Structures are given as structure tokens and as C-alpha cells.
Image 1 (cartoon, rainbow, N blue to C red):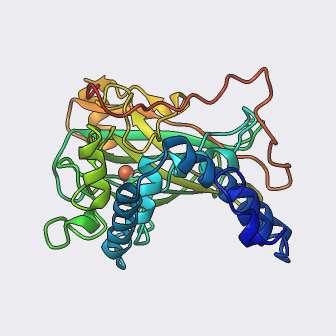
Image 2 (cartoon, rainbow, N blue to C red):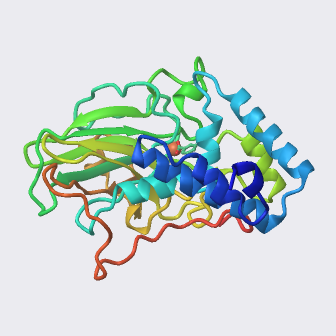
Length: 316
Ligand code: BEZ
Ligand code: FE
């Protein structure tokens, strides 16, 4: 039967999928076939109207038109639909042996400056001073000296330096640290603050139309790399931050949330070069070895990855 004869409401997906049957690349064929099946099922499920399809095309067009060298609205769309986190989670399974990953986000667009261990990355002098300490190890706890710890975070007003050129010092709240021979790293910063993702475009309008807020809970971004090991892109979250349970991009994993207790000890403050009192946090990072096969799925005995975030409703 020809395509013209067989295209019907019932058989649309089958007919369109068949049009891709000759795709030479088997993975492309698999992905397109599944995409068509799911898309057609969705259109039938909601009985999409012509007006709705037109609105969807207009929305996607506006999303594309909002993209430029520094704004990637399609990535934001993927983020708020939870697709970025799902792809991240599937592709970085830990098998319970290494630090969980989360989204990269759009603000790692400049190189972090190499800094000495202990340096203060808060160049704008605002916020609650904080000492961050941690240790990078392999999957069996072996220390990884010479590992690179790349960190960046928003300032106390909730903006990254690249969002406020001329207002914040360049490379404010960014640093590239090298662990000591025991795998340890430490640096001074401020306690990060929650902030909204860019919401002045189509994605922001989608959030507003659906009663969702645009906020992310307070976090420090990390990319940790070490020779012979799989890198991890992750966050350290503040345990008393608003929005931990409703992250706009579904990025929170329980294993990445830490307390930031207050230390009131003048001698210790002088030793680390911070005013007394100050806050502290400890964040150890474990990396899989490069020669380890990536876990196919979390083993049953490993607690399942808990991805928090059902944005909307209450801001807590
Ligand atoms: C961020 O954490 O920097 C981020 C992640 C996803 C979307 C927007 C911002
Ligand atoms: Fe961020």
C-alpha cells in the first residue's frame, strides 16, 4: 500500500516511521522512529487543535529568536522540562561509587582563574564569609593529588559575574584550584544565594503561564577532573536554602546537599583569614576511574538517585 493510501489517524506514526527505514545510521533511525512514535501519540492523546499547534510553533520560533552568543533559550527550555537533568542522570550513573552529577548551567562561559589553595574568590566583598573544604578521591577512597577543582557561583545579589559586567569584578566568585598531595582543597568564598534563571524570555513566560517560579536553590558549581578518572560536573547545595524542593531545573540531588554551620572561633578565623564568625562547609568528591565501565544502572542495593523538584506551589 502506498504512503498516500495508508496515512490515517490510526497509522500515522507507522507510516512516518517507515519513511525513515532507509536511514543508514542505525542510531539515527532508532532515535527518529521513537521520536515520531511518541510525538504522534502525544498529538492524539491531547487531540491537539490547529490553534495550539500554531501557538507551539510560535513559542519554539520565539525560543530560537531569543538565542544569541550568551543566551541559550533552548537549553533553558530543556532545563525547565527536566530533560537536561534526565540526560545528565542517564549518562552519569554512579553505581553508588562516585559523586552524583547535575546540570552544567549556562554561566560557565569564561575560564575560571587558577588560584592558590585558600584564596578568597569573593572579590566584591559582599555576603556571608565561608570556608569551603573538601577532598577529591577515587572510587575506593584513594586521594587524588593534583586534581583540578573548578568552582563558580552567584554573588550575594543572586547574579553571576558574566550577568553583571562592569558591576561585579571580572571573574568574581570563580576559581580553579589544584588539590594537594592528599587530594585536599580549600578556599574562601561567601555562602551562595538562591537566584532566578533568566526569565525575561519565552521560557519565563512558560513558567509564568503554568504558575511555576524561576528560582534555583543556593549552590556552588563544581567541575572536578583528575588524570585517569571520569570528570564530574556537579553542585554543592546549601541545606537551608529556599527552593531545594522546587528547583526550576530539577537539579537537586539529596547527596549534594550540605549544612553550612557557623564557626564562632576568633583564633580559627584569623588562621583561615576570615572575619569571626564565619560559615563552613565540607564537600568530598569521589571520581570513577577512567578504565571503569560506566555503571549500566544503579544496582538495587544502592539508594535510588533522588531528584528533587516539583516546581510551583510553595517556594520552599
Ligand atoms: C545555573 O545553575 O547556573 C543554571 C542552571 C540551569 C539554568 C540556568 C542556570
Ligand atoms: Fe548556578
